[in-house]
Length: 156
Image (cartoon, rainbow, N blue to C red; front, side, top):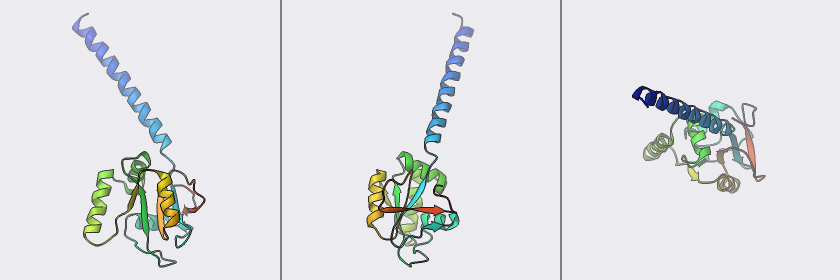
């Protein structure tokens, strides 16, 4: 084989690898599209406007407007598939950026740190037993919590 044919063969292999990489990323993105906001049945409103939800999730709004109760954030660990999806779609940050963001807010005394979970089941159980708790999961499987509508929609 000549050097030129080796280069063509290598280029072909790289092209195929690149195509496979793109297709695998598209399938992961398609699987991670649905996000649902869940809340404790006490103190958490049944519906929020998106701007209020973002304010709550960013730690800017610390009390619920209707009840006056404390907001308690429950999030998936940023290194989980749901956590990465939430970081990207809700916070527009990487997992590391999100953790630094909340660390700074906590250090400045402006917000409480979110409660992080490795599984959606644990997060849902925490939200169910904690008044004022709100979280984001890929689907609500726990009847002990309510799905919070955002701008009238059941998913983000």
